[in-house]
Length: 464
Image 1 (cartoon, rainbow, N blue to C red):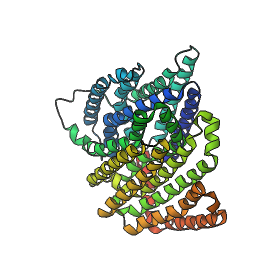
Image 2: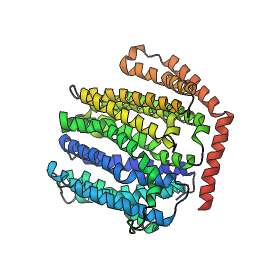
Image 3: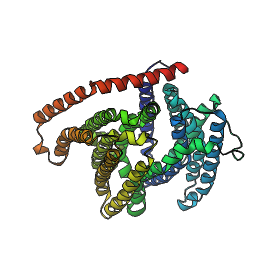
């Protein structure tokens, strides 16, 4: 593995991992009927909620801890494994509900999540992200090789999606296990580990609400409209989800790991700049989808899914707003304002449930359009809470929204009424917007923060 900045390493490996996943996904889809894919997506939406329940609190606690004692970590993992085992057993009736024996594998895969989360947390806090990324890529490649080997045996193609998911979890566990950094012990004789888990458990509510918000549209479509429509909706998510995975999905653990050593109130301006850059990057992705999305979907997924293009456009708009909300990262990493985080997640979950339920009276496109409203509500509510706790100035948030509008309004005009679009004016506004951002990044405050980040990263790497 090449020595590189940890952030670049994880981006590179996760980019390759996502490419492997989406290519295999495309090949498997060619063998499935849309309703078969829709059922898998519905099952995955349910399992994803429980994935957060059995693992995220461990990941957050490990990354955010000031120091880690091996005995405490061992007991925390043993506690997590027991919880995961119980939940896996409780989910076994899903096999009967869906009349699908493959669902059982999805439930069993939860058992491996606690160990994988602890290992990911340890590697992230030590900035060994190239090792983490390499293992994730290896697990993806091996699981897909096995799946396509089974294809030669003429096995039911529906089985491929489920076994691919299951194998990726167990192979990743197998790759982490030789480290032997943690082991399973009796956690009933001393409950001191609960103090170690407190940061993760404190944020568990908001994490559960967030994953619920991201999956409730799948559940509503699968249960009230049809599994076939859910398959079309899912294809519309593929490119936006890929972009999210390759960007903030890859770096968020790194960001939290770095900034546990900084005071969020001192770096609020820097987070604002993260929000600016991220939302503009998402707007650039939106333009790619507007221009090339339909052709890509028809070429890669087939004519059956061509209506997914409009889903992709709507979700890309909502994603750009979500990326703008990265300016509110101080709230997400702050240990003191977890109540504000829960309030944001709860209110967004309620709004999403109401809007998606309302949209289900029409069709999946209406639900996708309403995802933009949900994302906007999330941004506004998180901005309000951040200013309430004095984490970010109102004027800075206004700057983010202004720059975002400058970059996104032309894209919206192009999507809704292309005749109103003017390429020369758009290019001029984009150049001015980028000039403002470059000036902001060159400020003394930003340079100081960048240097602090680099020192934290280097010191962690040198300890290793």
